[in-house]
Length: 310
Picture 1: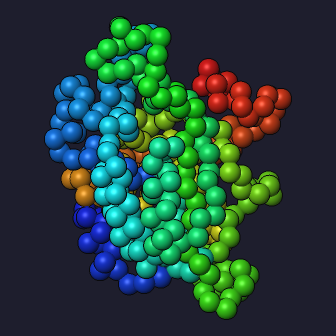
Picture 2 (picture 1 turned 135 degrees about the vertical axis):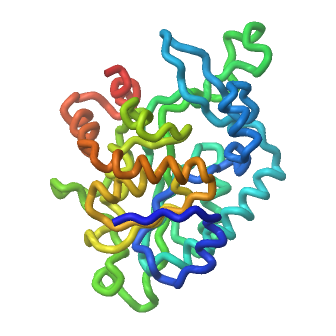
């Protein structure tokens, strides 16, 4: 069962009782500005603003991407304060031992991770989603022809997802915390292997983008893998405070878990109401790309390229 609320997640979490959710899985608007009304309208018109509108490649029009390189030290201070306050609220609503998994970028990961750790969480690692995207590798803006042989930052071939844990209840071992709160550890893969911190992935398939045309929609193959891991006993409710088009909720629904989403944008809220049931019904194998790597004999360093050729 899933529920979705049209609300500001800060105000919504302030009203919630403590220790409600076994896990939080979310992909927030990291720049804090690319999803405001003005920049979303620019993105839709194709005029850019904080969104980079990639050129057509091979006749295929790529999705817009946020520009994460235009922010000052003051923006970073604002971001730290934002995620510190948000982290304190997330800490309150998670059960002891509950995991928080949050999508990030290499540029902003240190700022956001510091804020969430300072809010009380333990940093448990970084999950590397191996995926080749169009983020990065840009030529200097408004001088692309003049400096066609240069790029302002590396082309991205991975996406970091920070993994945190709310501390166990004081005095309890991991086993005791699992018995009481159903949280404190990560669920192993179905074949018994430990949950890995490097996950070969894919760009979000077109069939999913048709269902949910959100500009930063993540693929169900990856989302189901993450949600599977953070509900270690197969019980409890997963929260996504920045639910967007509902990819976390759909992943939880597909796995038979309960979930709650909060979305402040009315357009994305309505999109998620329609998309969650459809995304959840898709036949998706969360471990397909892992097996592909294992059977290919290729190293992980090359896999990020190879997985996107098919």
